[in-house]
Image 1: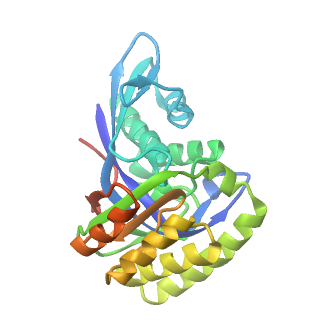
Image 2: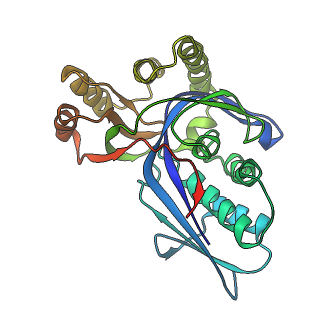
Length: 279
């Protein structure tokens, strides 16, 4: 059984922690992209997890496998997205595992119920708070109430499958940022303000504007990322930081691509209109 899950990049967010992982989550807004995690489940003599064809501990996916599998399986996840750079790779692998296991063992879970297991795994291991619920539906996703799938509230801003350019320099530890009270105080303040403003006029342009403002005010963007964002804006485009990663994304155009080339290898994909699914 095989499942595919889009990557997810966040423009701005605020976090909520709760003793119950299903009540933990984030509010904010982000894009799912057509850089997928493709997860395949097969029967095996012992449970093994492979990431890009190499054996992996993959604790987030393993949590899902231990929770849902009814017999040993071989789990293979192929990532089209950069790993550890704010593209929601761990959530995508866990969500794909949940979908595939649900189908393989005929568990009879709904999409939200399967996704809830992946969300719990992310919260427990500190790798994310809002990726799974967004990856479950796809598009330009507003997370207006924190919590896992079935508890959190999400909506979409209708957008066409526009091209997105991006440059990645390296990872930022999601766990370290989310566990730093001083950093999170500023993030939560700006994230809540950004969401409140976006809900007054939910458009792609305002999402990009507020994402840019969030990255600037929280001082999360590195020096090169700030310079790259300014370069895209000077070319007439829209850009911001990918949270949480040392990376920048821009609405796709030849001008924005040219502006980003100065800062590294430019990747190109498009907004995914499709959430997690079985293939």
